[in-house]
Amino acid sequence: MDIRDFIDKIPFARKAQAVAFDPCGLIAISKGSGIMSHPNPNPKDNMAPSILRAKYNFKEEYFSWKAEGCEENLHLYLINRLDSPTSGIMLASANKELAAELKKAFKEKSAKKTYYAICVGRPFGKEGEWNDFLDIKRFGNFVRGKTGGGTRAITRFAFERIDENKLMLSLMRLEPKTGRTHQLRIQCASHKLPILGDETYGDFEANRRFRRLAGAKRMYLHCAKTEVEFEFNGKKINFCAEDKLPQSFKDIIEFNGEILIKKMGKI
Image (cartoon, rainbow, N blue to C red; front, side, top):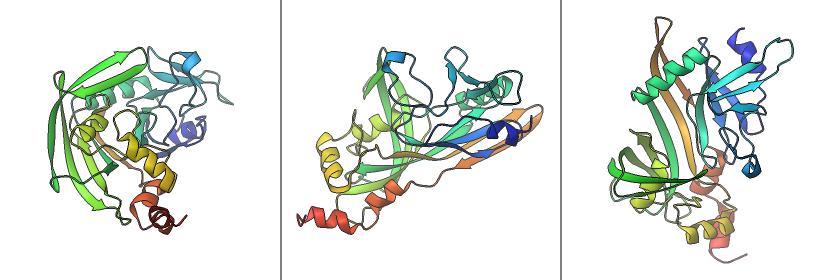
């Protein structure tokens, strides 16, 4: 089946869509904030939808569904995931063999991801590198982490711009060199730049304030670009997928008269 035909048969949920692909079967998916990369393993806790309206095999990490005109079920294998509150690019594969090669590429650090975050506060420098040790604990389906002990986490950061509404917010570019759970969220908070809207590691008072000023209901972390180099069937492939900054980011960072009026207490 041609990859374009395969994509047309994927039962995407709302706020998820394919934005790029390679003929080998690699697919880049734009995931919206508030939906899960895959269903919750505990059906009783499965409140939020996932990117596909399909069954998920947790052992082999693929979605499975019956498509019109196909005798056998179709499968979509996840290569990486994003936290439910995070939006942006995630990768998937139309076949198992390709998925294995891509996971190997991610493990060997031949994949590069670029995130943008709106953070509360101002960084101490224009750019640099955070090198921390993260202690990650799992409690059933929940994950919590902090700096100190554990495993090394490295992230390149760059200050992009301040918010035009003078609310002490910063748009940051983040490039993780390691792939630890909640890495960017924990490191931003640890370096006194909590991500706006982060309900686990963020500044809860600031979250409430911006929810009142701007109706800010999401976590402002977005995977804008993913690049990966790998070999498949004897061919070297360089793949890059991008997802532009959501309008919700622009509403906060760019000039917003309604925010300024609320800030001044006029309404």
